[in-house]
Amino acid sequence: MTIKNWETVNLDTVCNLIGGGTPSKSKQEFYTGEIPWATVRDMNVDFIENTQLSITEKAITESSTNIIPKGNVIIATRVGLGKVCILNQDTAINQDLKGVIPKNNLVLPDFLFWWFKSVSDEIVDAGTGLTVQGVKLPFIKKLQIPSLTLTEQKQLVALLDQAFAAIDQAIANLEKNIQNAQELFQSKLNDVFSQRGEGWVERSLGEVCIVERGSSPRPIKEFITDSKDGVNWVKIGDVGESDKYVTSTRQKITKKGAEKSRFVDVGDFILSNSMSFGRAYIMKIQGYIHDGWFVLRIPNSINPDYFWQLLSSPYLKNQFNELAAGAIVKNISGDLVKKAIVPIPPLDTQINIFKETELLSNKTEKIISSYSHKIKNLEELKKSILQKAFNGELT
Image (cartoon, rainbow, N blue to C red; front, side, top):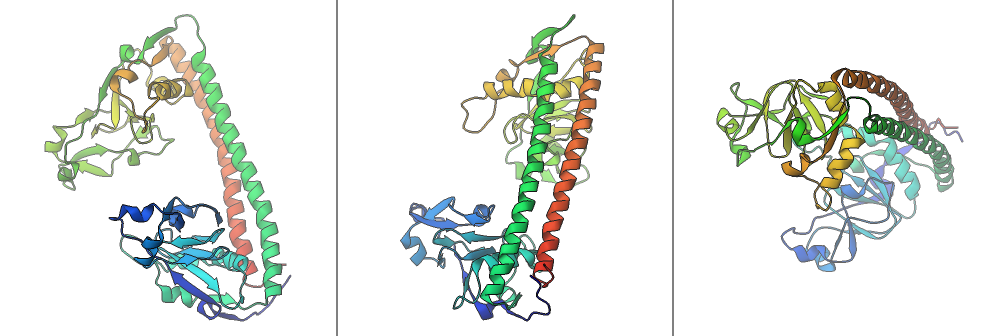
């Protein structure tokens, strides 16, 4: 299929755009109904089968929300700007979304879906706002959509469906390869720390290092500061999941706030306790930690690199999970953390183990990086195909 020099029209020429609304959050009974109510949190899939929240008929009549019939497209014009989905059931939508309903069957919903995908970057680039980027309804109405016959739309949709199904399958295979590589590395890591040899001993974590919980000055907002005299305030957002070191913090607290917190020094280990439970890092800077962290201070008889690899391994993480079992939100007390059993080989063996596992880690990361690069290329290919499709260049 090749269509050259096709005409375009304003979106509102061929579609009605229907706004959404949010029922009063102070009236909890509004959220006890059976009418699906979509928010951007439901838009992580192309087709929305279910919504996280449902509302009552009274909630609809007392708010500005509307029910969009199934089979139609919804787009995010504020939170989640540029996201697009097709509804698989009649669904009310919140204030950040718009329903796009064809006039007189001039446009196929599937065609609309792919076209919105092709202009998502244009929508995002047009976003304005200090805290949350959004676009106004007049902007969406004036977007230029190709004016094709239904037959031409069906042909284009069929080509895109076929092309994207193949690409998505290739991406899924690569993601599975990444998962397999990660699982293989974790399995090897677990085997390493499960072995025993001459000079190895098993001790509880509380026996081999000092374990102390962090502390927060409250209310914390009164101690956050931009002053040069402030001290580093370590939060989970300061480090990535695969990071090893804490090298900087986004926030600082006052020295008065520090008096009510827990000091951590360069070389100390910190272990997350609540959000992102069980993640370990080594301090490269001095700072203070809240009660969502533990600080672990090791003796000279333990190699820091070995200890970090041990804390990051399934061998210890599985113990932490078992100790924290039963909690609605995963967290663990200092007394329970101290009960975890750690294998401690001689110091030279610790160093050799780290070198071996680090070599394996580097090889795994290279494999994952290669797969990730291929996924990125495939995502770029999808954008290129969409661009060509709606420029009339797809054959």
